[in-house]
Length: 313
Length: 249
Ligand SMILES: Cc1cc2nc3c(=O)[nH]c(=O)nc-3n(C[C@H](O)[C@H](O)[C@H](O)COP(=O)(O)OP(=O)(O)OC[C@H]3O[C@@H](n4cnc5c(N)ncnc54)[C@H](O)[C@@H]3O)c2cc1C
Image 1 (cartoon, rainbow over the protein chains, first blue to last red):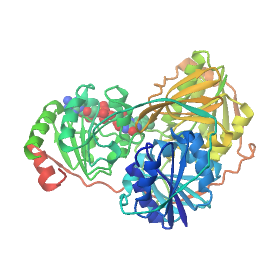
Image 2 (image 1 turned 45 degrees about the horizontal axis):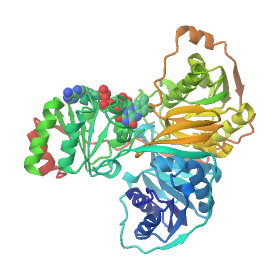
Image 3 (image 1 turned 90 degrees about the horizontal axis):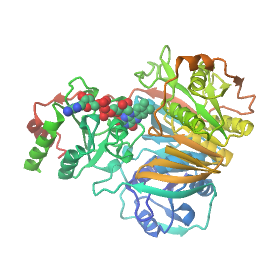
Image 4 (image 1 turned 180 degrees about the vertical axis):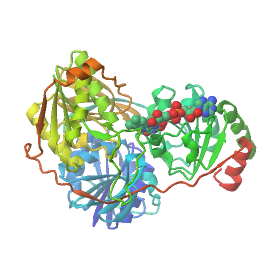
């Protein structure tokens, strides 16, 4: 078996999710090559070559891939990937965008968002917002699979020394153009891979009040997340949404503040190791999944939490 | 321009999902079904494009059992002009759905195809992208804004890092995210009117598409339940527990 992992990156650094996907590839077993497609992405290729268990790094460095447009990546990956038994990518917004195109171009099914590998053709994945867990078997010759990064412990990012090979395959489908992007800038850890996440919901009442959560988060080196209601109300930007249709997180500690715990929110955080809920409604469903529940008004509890944390951290 | 909208009949998002005791799937007997929430947003977007004078005709298509007609009628009540029902009782997976939709696209030649980004049953997030690849169209996935300008459409996409805008040649595929719009409710007069709107029925065989699934589901289980936790009396106890019991800070 031979597995092609598509690296996730921003042209300058390799995202940790790639190491989680390589771990999923190891669970399948076989030679693992990593494809780095981007523009001026040499540093990413070097980083990928150091990842544990990688056999070879293929680099497609061209303006056509600079913004990870699904049309161009789809054609590239279908072409490079057709000689492999498996093609894997992280189930982030880049992978979710181009991987189904790859599958369609190769005329194979895609298995989305796997949480576990049972065997080379059988995978476990959540359905119905994680309210059911399906074991699915693919009968296709090439398995196109997106991987839920939080479900696999990352391989080491150092120590490997894979060969790096430049590809000169340029696929510009000519169907789409990048116009612009508004990327959130934050000095906090990346939400999807942070060890601690502090999230706020509709109970926060406005965007200003999220500062309280940010202060608590900064004490613990945590990322800040949100429920859909908080994003829809405009308190915080969309990239902070945790849930079925937002980001999937599984930190060591998840603190839900003023979040009721709708199933669509739980779908994004219920694999966290320890869950804390702060909510004034003792009937809120979030308490059914919380290891530690505090029934309190968040406007009193969060400032107290900041003070208590200062004492112990 | 003509807009094609694909809608799926799924379990209502408020229903508590139960796995069948024999682990073959999810219990859908006597469960409330509805239009997939992302598809409602797709219909709404098409209707708004028509209200702005951008879209001239909205065709809504659904693949599924006889009862999927209800979802087509709902879309017609919301403002779609005409329906197509690709009727089958078989399970239709994403690739096969994309192939069926491709056949419909070839017949209808829409300038824009709008779909939900995922359906809340299988949570696959595939069909729109597969359709785009099979028809050689560009795709604006996870859309939070759609602006048609001449022979292009600008789509603002919700991505992990924030927002990204792409410009696509028409015809193109758009898949909706939650913040694209807030769907309206159908009014009673429009529900009545929708009953008279044309609805074509066809089978996958009529479209020449083999819908045999490539993936087989070996079993479906309930997720591991989390152990019930404890309530703490105050913040001091919470921090003490996090530090000394859970050891996570
Ligand atoms: C298709 C679909 C996809 C969805 N995807 C997602 C998703 O990805 N992520 C997501 O989060 N949601 C998602 N949702 C929405 C979800 O169903 C809920 O509507 C949402 O999660 C509710 O957010 P919330 O808990 O912040 O708000 P609410 O449900 O309104 O809860 C607010 C909570 O704050 C508490 N509160 C209020 N004031 C205070 C106070 N002063 N002190 C303490 N507590 C207080 C209240 O008791 C309440 O429990 C989706 C819905 C659909 C239909």
